[in-house]
Amino acid sequence: MPTIARLPDLLISQIAAGEVVERPASVLKELLENSLDAGSTAIQVHLEEGGVKLIRITDDGCGIARDELALALTRHATSKIASLDDLERVASFGFRGEALASVAAVARLAITSRERGAAHAWKLRGDNLATPSGAEPEPAALMAGTVVEMRDLYYNTPARRKFLKSESTEFAHCADAVRRLALTRPDVAISLTHNGRSLFQLAPADRARRIAEVVGDDFVAAARSVDAAAGPISLSGFAIDPTRASEAKDGQNVFVNGRFVRDKIIGHALREAYRDVLHGARQPAVCLFLEIDPGLVDVNVHPAKTEVRFRDSRAVHQFVYHAIQRTLATPIQATPAENRGHENRGQTPVFPEKKPGAAPAFPPPLRHQASLGVAEPAATAYLAFAQAAQRPAPSSSTADAPQFRPEVPVDRDGPPLGYALAQLHGIYILAQNAGGLIVVDMHAAHERILYEKLKTAFDDRQVATQNLLIPAVFSADPLDVAAVEEHAEALAELGFRIAPLGPGQLGVRAVPALLQSGDPVALARSLIADLREHGITQLATARRNELLATMACHGAVRARRQLAIPEMNALLRQMEETERAGQCNHGRPTWTALSLDELDKLFLRGR
Image (cartoon, rainbow, N blue to C red; front, side, top):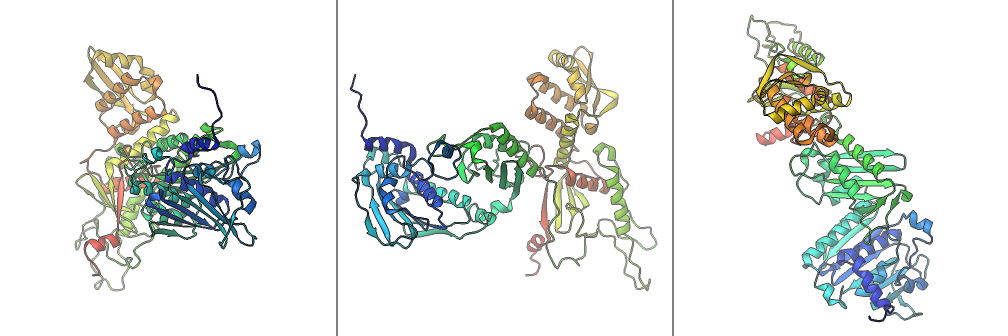
């Protein structure tokens, strides 16, 4: 057995560096955090060869005193904490005092710093921690702040250097590190230069502007603003609109007390909040800032400090989940007053023009209203509106009065989705609002409306049923019949009455009133298959919602179904009142808009 011996300090530091210094981006992150902790208002980053050859950080922070320069390069030396109480309430980026020592163990490091109020700056080199005890720093020229230079990463540990990727890859990681730190401190000016080429210069700005500069204007334009608070915790930032999400998996920027983290609790809360509004493999892109009492979060659980542990993780999960869910559930908002100068345009008539001597042509009577589940007041209000719109304005001379053409007026204070014009191929509703043209996928929109109503009714245990005059009979295997008999009470809670009518036959006697226009056999088959696979006892919220979504899909108005104008408008009004109405249960968009300016461009108007 080899003799136990104490490891040399240099080897200890090199071992520790394996945890802290994974690649140039790791060094850059630690040095940037030190600059931010020093109260800097401007930071310049210079890189060469992806950060492997050179990383230079220049800041205008408080600086380091001459007598503390050598101490700053030793392990576990820091100005951030002094007691266990400080460790349990860490409010700074750095606190362990390992970064500079670890970097100095695997690279050539030099620090030049001028403390505020000092006569001049001092410079100290820390190659391999070889600075002898009591070594005197050299006088240096520097206006203010600190300059940290790291050269030749892993020059003394060539085996580690072989694991580094290409220059472009390492630089990409470095650029990401700079951008993330830029997001958390929009009040600090940050610039980045690589191989002598300036990549970006960010001036101090408000948070929204900084996010637009770093993540992109497209993200901000496609995202919804998040702002929620409860006691010692708050959440702000932006979350992508579900219809604008992509399949990119690197679009989540989450910060806890300004620290970028990859947290499983928050990640799960985001996935749950977006569960039934994202289509296919699309991902919830966000830029969120969670602020919490430092005493309620432990940041000392990962060497790279990218993971945290919450004292009450369930409370944090529920807070984030409900904050994002409420943001995504915001009803459709009014279209901004755009396209100034278009107010006096002639509008496309919805109804045939009035013929001489004939009575005015009014909208078709309301049809199939109960089967769509639309509200009577909404349809009645539209009829009154349409009739008033067709009354010609009084004229002093009847003979000179222009021939009356019924129109849909543009009400700048009208509903966000406007008023229906027509139905296209039995699939889309065309509507006109103050901004231009609205196109609605009627099946997708009705599906979301039914889904939200089913969830509310199921939660309140008030699922109304509709008895069928003639039972819908279908063939079933013995397992289907057994499942119906076993789960009769559960089926009743869901609004169904299904009973065996003979060997190998089931009959649907009642369905949920909200789904009465759907195919009762298709609804029953889908429900029975779900019960056979999962059982009613395993119908947790997520699984239950999937079941209700399937029911809503089967019960929604089908394509090719002809709707009257009042039915279309009643559907638009219900969309405006329904949470998450911008997406169907499968995450597909339910509507889109074309502004008058966009239509002008299509037809080259004004050119």
